[in-house]
Length: 189
Image 1 (cartoon, helix red, strand yellow):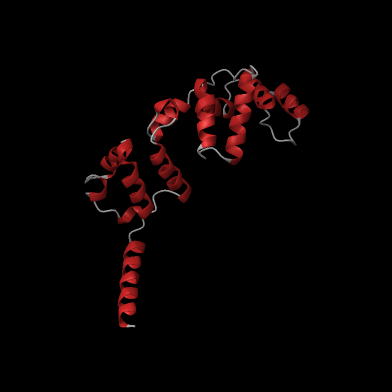
Image 2 (spheres, one colour):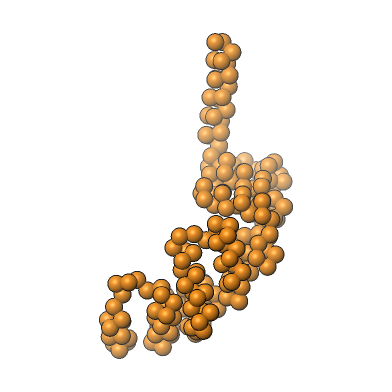
């Protein structure tokens, strides 16, 4: 009984120490687990190196710096080691997949490895299908970011119409969307 009590007490102390070190504010520099990085910028630089994915994900999990979903995806990527176009980090994969010319490869990779799921996956498939059918992107759209900016803040009526037309042809508009009301809105602009 005494041995069980001592082991239980040791486990409780360990859990308390771990629980206390679970926020960004608890991080003490330099961080030994991250190559002795001396500040947040140096730690980010260390973790941008694909060779350091595992210790960085472990550290992020310990300090509650990423969501459980992000941690799971990062661990999965660490096992895969390489993504579309040979990308090997979040930034290089984002840069590669931000080019519409790579949509087939990136969509397949995202779906196969669970990086794209649910509504995000369905929307990506609809955009790909529309592009495969020859539907033109609105003027100023070259990637997801530029399309979002272009269509959320169109510079003129023509671009707004192009955004609406692409969304309609890609099947991105909600089922209750009223085409007649949209056309009336365009005529008022």
